[in-house]
Amino acid sequence: MINKNLLDENETLILNKSIKIQDLIYVIRDQQVMTDSNLAEIYGYTLKALNQQVTRNIERFPPDFMFQLSLNEFPNLKSQNVTSSWGGNRKPPRVFTEQGIYMLATIRVQGHKS
Image 1 (cartoon, rainbow, N blue to C red):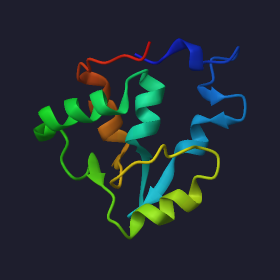
Image 2: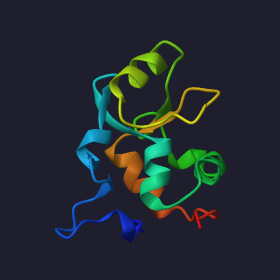
Image 3: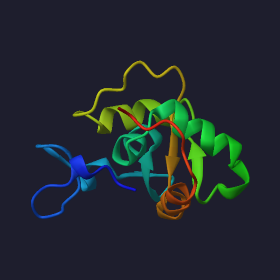
């Protein structure tokens, strides 16, 4: 379920007035992906809760659905992401392909943001 506060009057998904969903899609390893932190925000979950559920359901996320960035890839992603704050993540994020995003939508995540 998408956080309804993130839809504009045209039902376009936005995170704030200047960021649209298209701005959150990156090309990594020749695949279009979105980060775990951006998906948590879109779905209205805490990052911790989202990642816990992915870990509990890891068999549903093969490498072509989701992967964790390497230490070499992480700085490149940060340089592409000039508008979002990384909030001091200690490890590289997980990224999800289109299939992984669909799978993520099917798992029940406890930990909606208030």
